[in-house]
Length: 246
Image (tube, rainbow, N blue to C red; front, side, top):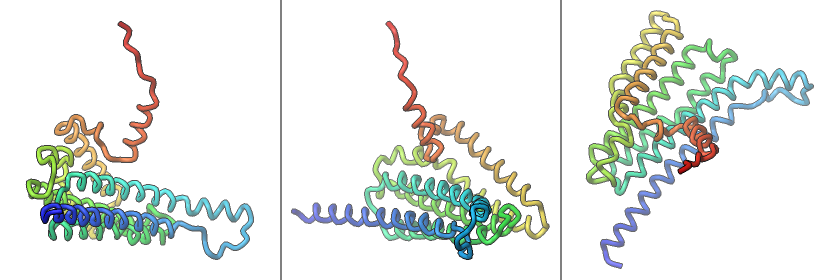
């Protein structure tokens, strides 16, 4: 084995370690989140009515956990796509990846804010903290994508496909949208603006992004990375194939 082959094997091994470490962080975060979704510890030998009441009380937490699982799963699947283009790495990429993983690791902390309240939608700061952490993770992943695209000739395969595959035109909007939304949240709390107005602006931004996706990436629905898209594709696979009669 010559020196060049040895370096290539070493590089591939180190790259796999980087990917495996990232996967492990995602798995641990998802596992930690579910630990807070449990029946009250004081509930010992409950009656059927007590069990039913306790279950109904934790259902909102289960719902929030399911949403968080979907969000983190989407981040992981996007991370998987990002690293599928990778052929090499450097220290800057490793640092940006660690920053992104740090932002994702804050999800259990965000959920702890919400889980301490019996009335989840009334706990404004808890929800704002959760939304802020989601956007922080989105922003740090955007930084990771930006660095990869800027250094694609050195670090990536398929350099002509990466911007389209990662929908870079859409992602770079977060450089303006996320700081702007953070300012809106702070102003809303300072001036006591109804939180539903803030959520309406969030939904409006989501609709704008969807419209731009249709315009800039007409085939984006065929390439979406979400759990919903998975079920849609699974449904399509079950449909019978129509035969064309000659």
